Length: 631
Image 1 (cartoon, rainbow, N blue to C red):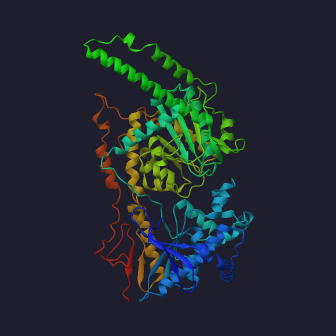
Image 2: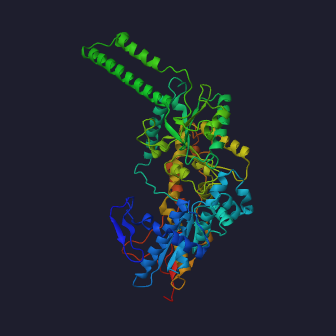
Image 3: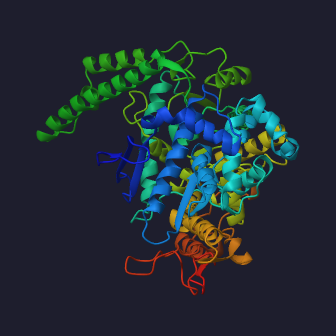
């Protein structure tokens, strides 16, 4: 959102509509917005120029690609006009993300503009399409005929735009090591540097405030579960674990298929071991629906009616108790509830009777018979019966605090769950497990996701910190499913105290994902681009090999990561325990703080500009952009 009114730019392209103002997000950065619709009349001319200069043809029916052409030419024009109006030779740096913005980068290089360019792909276009087709992607990366594969999927022009941007950029980056391997084979260029995605981490002043937020949000989820399973609430909510998977509805790419299969196997294990733990698994993935499920809405109405009845009886009971105490007599318990009270309670109990099973889906699906999740549930037989220890709830809409069904936003919901499960097959980074980590919620990821690879690199024993890494790269589907089932079963065996300790450890990893730490990779990429674009002015010194490896959190010595590795599922707090086995959270947290590097301190307003840096200045990663003696 930008406050300021639009500016009409006159000159070479008269009528171009540009908005300039502040972006209403944290930090309020300046932003320039270009309305591509105002120059749609130039589309054919620019397509001709694109074909003459790059031999890339864009079909008329691809509206998204047409907008990318308009935006690319306008971006190059804007940077060119800015450079032309600078009094001194400028040193401009432009960072382009994804193929939609990539044409502007290629035009900057073709027009020889004084612009250092960086191109970042967060996921290759062809990679997404190939994985959606259920191919053995990672084992055949070197064997794909990329031109043919892109042509078969009618995205060859888009692929050409992405590959051109990657080849033309001074510096090419990706968000993870796994995506770097993918880009090297599909875009035919090895990334120069990895720039992981970060989050704006907000620390609470009270150390355990996030634990309090977890308890509050969990209570709200429990209220929803009470309504959803009314009439069949034959399990103890205090021994109920909430698991969830969320994201785009890509059944295989996001790992929903393997998660459902693992839930069926977990259900068997919990039943044969006579476990008193109940697992409720939420699937938060948007699909085509026409409205809420009537039975689901009825459940929440019945729950509210029961609450109102209980509140009314409580008020009547309290009034009689108060009057009895006023006259100095102990109440006669047998007379505290009269026939009217019992009638009200019997009516409420009668309303909770239910002949059908609790619904799986909270909405009416438009394609119920062919929906992948519902089809898989019918195959594995998880129908929320009383005998099942694993219950499934499919919520085919993103969460909203204004929903009449589950009035919680996504952050509140995540805080209230116990475990996030993201067994993705294709996940270039993975914001969902990263958000879980920042909120102190353990998660399951894979070694095919950027987040999982990043955590394996930085943590000696990720599972000890609540980061379970599933092997989907070197194991078959059935083996991976068994491993996931094992993780879930181990998690169900943990005591409440063990889960609290694990959440404390998980939350301490949030510094790893803070932009104050991960921003150094972007700064390094910018130094590199400036040195390549302006070699007479800037010099880039690569970082040391030791600092490139980052740091590694050690495995905590106080508690085993999972019950399967020890007979104790949590530290004892009895009189007889050895002093060495006690869990000292403050001591452990201090060790973790020593393992993490301090965030890069950016120059103050009165200090020197970050570009170019003096010869003695270096960022926290050992990278240097040194001003040349020739300047």
